Structure formats: structure tokens, C-alpha cells
Length: 478
Image (tube, rainbow, N blue to C red; front, side):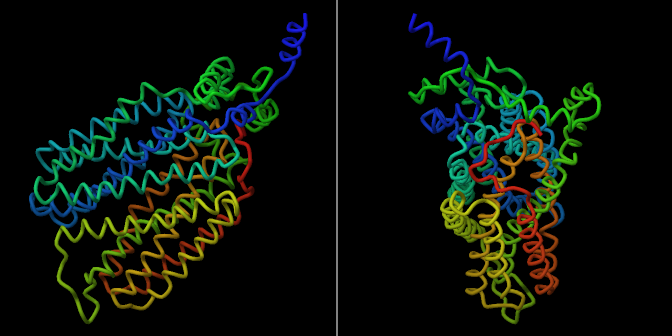
């Protein structure tokens, strides 16, 4: 009788998904999720970093023009622009796992086949397909985020971001080893190994319980939570799992005067329009500014490092000889190491200071490091200033990757994250026009001023975000 009465009392108790994740803690299960999501982030970094190495080699071997060489990078970013939006819709409407699988398939096949490209056109097509696959990067981040308890969630998202930097460092080391002796085809083939690993390990992934709850599949979500409890050797709270009905009602109220419109949000257009609904419009527009600013500054600083620190700027009174390819690999490796202090600083402040204030502070520091370059400096000082600027810009990039998926509800989290990333890809395509063309045209002051304006606008946008997400539970519906 006592046991029966206790069971009846427990049946009357309820708990939310956030309470369940807090009770389960961050254990072995989450570490495994982190490794897989981090592997996906490494794939992104590796395939993007390849662009720094294969362009010069292909230009020489296939006698490409500068425009044709640049197009290899452009098609990848164009593919990422398309993929970021498309994979977000797949993940939000059909599940995180289906998003992970399709991303892994497209990326792996196209990345490996590109190493066998017989000509320039086939390479462009395959690398664009790689870009479409890489556009699914936000799926990995959203999937990992939804397994993490709200406490110290920002810290773990920063740790997840370090996999990107690890990928850039490893790719630079691989290029230093492979390119001088074996060439670009072997570099492309070996660089696809992380993609194959992500595809193979997919069978061990599980669906996000938060996504399942958002879709009303409470029983399935509970089954996943029980698996987490077994792996972590912890226990779920007593009672039954429930969803947040209040936010769900707000979602229905948002969608329209008519309930029949709810089903329309299964379509891509409706999901996109939901990002621009009255409740999300401010968040979405500010996020776009931040992601544009981050990508514009990040890729611009990398290109400025080459233009100002390598002695390639012909506007100076003293110009150095062009670097050999081996010097290029070494410099990319060193500049990648410059991101480690930025990641460490982000790790230290994300939970203590918060997302918004930390990002604003790092934008200001990036502004200060770039400002002396308004006028030409000597090579050593230029290198120091650009490395310092990269430290803070990678920090803002990292914290934006924490804040963006946190602030969007589960129902449109991956779509919102993906569209913001797409805006960043546009900035990645525009940035070379400023960082390379203006500097080569002897307009360094104009280039730096433009970067400074972008950094200030990004800082203002961060401060205008409506909420701080530090310690805040994730929302499932608008």
C-alpha cells in the first residue's frame, strides 16, 4: 500500500525538460554529443581552410586567372548561403537527426569526389555542393545545445566552438605536410576523412528531446531522457514530463487569428516569415547585423594579415618578395593559433559577464586594435595589431554562436541560426572587396575605417538585444 501510494503521488508530480536536463547533469552522454557535434564543426573549418591552400596551386597548374581562382572560394560561400537556410528548415521541420544525416551525406560525397575533379568546371560544381553541405553547420550547434543544462550552457558552447579552431590548425599542419610533395588532390582527399567519420558515427546519434517535446512527442522525448540517465548514471525527477503550455499558447496567438494557419509553418516560407513576426523581428534583424559584422571582420582580418603583414602591399615604399607557398602554410597556421586566446577569454567571461556585455567589450577591443592601421605601420606592428584584432573578433564570433541559438525558440531555432549564418556568408563574399581590393588600390585608410564602422554597428546591435540569455532556460515556442 505504501509503495502504491508513493507511486500515485509521483504520478501527480510533473517536471519540464529543463528540469530534467538539470537533474541529469552534464555527463558522459553530453560528452559524446559534444564530440560528434565538434566533429561536424571541424569538418566546416577544414573545408573552408582548404580554400587558402588549393587556390594558388590550381592557379599555377591549370593556368587560371585571378578571377577564376577567386571563384573557387565564391562558389563555396554561395553554396553555404543556400545550405544554411535549407538545412535549418529540414532540421526544424523533420528533426535534428535527419538534418545531421543529409548534411553529412552531401558534404562527404562532394568533398571526396572533388579530389578527382578532371577540370575546373567540375571542381566548381563539386565545391559548391561542399558549400551546401557546410551550410548545415548550425544544425550541429543547435543539436548539441539542446542536450545541455541551462547552467554553464554558455561555457560548453564555447568549448564546442574550439573544435573549429582545432580544425583550422590541423588543416594548416596537413597542408604543410601534404602539399609540397603530394599536391592538392591528396589534400582534398585526406581532408574529407572527418566528413567520413561524421557520416559513420551518425548511427550512434539520437534525436533532440527538446525537438521531440516541441513536436508533441512527449513519450519519445522521455525515452531519450531515460537513456541519458542510464549513460550518466543519474536519475530523472519524480513525476511525468510535460511541455511548456504557456509558451505554446503564445505561439498560437502569434501565428494568427486563425488556428488553421499553424500547419503552414511546416513550409519553408512560413518558417522564414516567423523569424520576421512581431515577437522575433527585432531579434532577427539585430542577429543579422551581428553575423554580418562578425564574418565581414573575421575574414577581412585574415586577408588583411596577408596584405599588410606579408609585404604584398605595393603602396609602401618598401615591398617584399612574394611569399613561397610553404610560407603561406606557416602563416595560416600561426594566425590560427591567434584564435586560442580569444576562445580562452570567451570561456572565462561567458557565464560571469554574460553574452551581451562580453560581445560588446570584445567589439570595442577589436576596434582599438584595428584603429592604428588607419595609417600604414611597419610589418611587425601590423602583424601584432591584426593578431590582436583577430583574438577579439573570434571571441565575438564564438559568443554570437552561443547567443543566437539560445535566443530563438526550438520551433525555429535551426532556421533562425541558419539564416543568420547565411547573412554571414554574404559578408564573407563581400569582405575581400574591402580587405584586398581597397588595400591593393592604395586605399588602406578607407578599408580600415569601413571595418571600424562595421565593428561599432555590431557592438550597438548587441547592446540592443532585448534579453540576456545567461542562465535562461531555452524556449520551445514563440
